[in-house]
Image 1 (cartoon, rainbow, N blue to C red):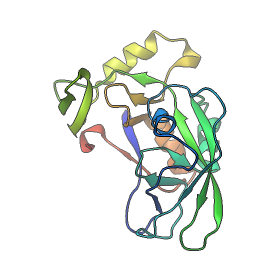
Image 2 (image 1 turned 180 degrees about the vertical axis):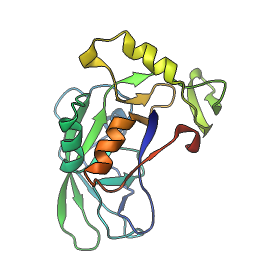
Image 3 (image 1 turned 180 degrees about the horizontal axis):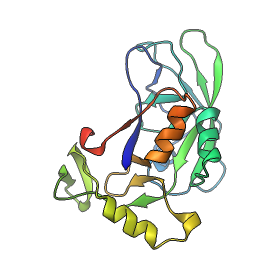
Image 4 (image 1 turned 60 degrees about the vertical axis):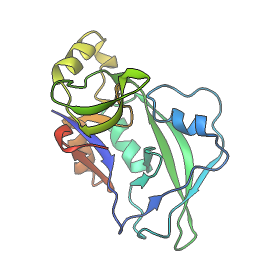
Length: 198
């Protein structure tokens, strides 16, 4: 089973609404396209919004759909052999206590074209009919994921990846969900694709 991995956003939990300092829009957008970023990353820092809560979880929701994670989150991925990601250090300054906390931007590498075009309800991008502009209801086809992975070597098969047609959606298999839940990682949820939309 494949699930959508997303940060939990609510008023009790910390939220980042600003763009990391010292970055351009191009660099920030690149962490959401499933491709490797080359070159040295700038020193990255953000501040949590005072419109949200004080609880600082392992996965921090944010306006840019970056995957902002703690080291325990990455430790789980490493322990179960997930290697298709880059990490960039990010300092998160807490709005309440002004303390600075060490986090990472996790750039998930790899995309799979697995949108179920018959079941999904989407508005296509006006200039690219292979990219979703608005996802009204997500649906994925596990057979397309299997076909993609079957063409790869065992070590290259993707268990964590981005949906190629709408790369803001991060897809994980249930072994990743189980490991993250067992480790007690906070701030992240796993939803059935049909429960997800923009």
